[in-house]
Image 1 (cartoon, one colour):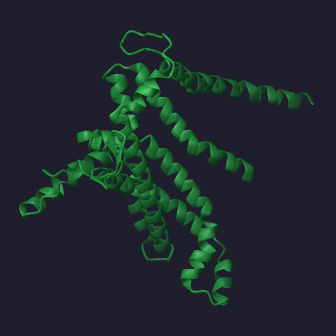
Image 2 (cartoon, helix red, strand yellow):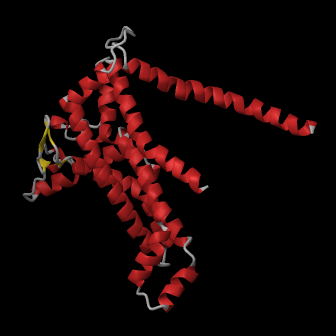
Image 3 (cartoon, one colour):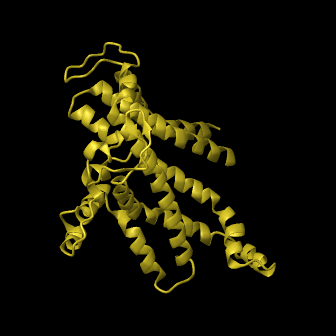
Length: 302
């Protein structure tokens, strides 16, 4: 009996420092950021005078922040869709017991070893109209400018912005998909290898074609994998910063700008700490909208 209580006491002794550090450096700083977002701190000199929701209302009236929301919506949709579809297709191909499977798997996983900054620099060089592949195309009479385009397709007026897909954001999507598809591939490949062969064989014996086996038997088994990929990619896309910072910056007319980049410039270049904190809280809420339901769902399943 004494040994059991002794084990619990020692467990608490080891856990308490971690709880205290998480409480201070995670939840404490989140609370402090929320408080700053409601203040009038807009210079290097702190000003904690209460401003209410003024910083938030100013943001949502701002043309740049409206453009950021538009860019984030389309980037998230295109990024998640492409990563899930391409990763699943590659996983199906590799699952066919092809030769040199480990080689292909490593090739697709390699981009994940790079940071988003490195990826941004590489793709910036490749897609820039004055360098890389486009420089070679220009020499033969082709001069693609979509990487620095300010065109919005389709252009639907909404408030101060046109609500449509910025052409330049497609370049960011390509770079992000190139880097993160390996993660989706690994997830789906593990899921495919976990589907019992008996289920597949039973469907084939019943006369199902390979297409029906995949869509009627395998796909339902991969739903938890798909949900995990969507949640994790959504988390990455909503707070994306380093890739865009290294690759394009905010772009002309903010066609490649995102809230995280706006937060960085507002806080550390304009010294508007209250405005930057307001953007940070909005980012936190948007990520929580995806993460919290996912965690609750997993807890119920467990």
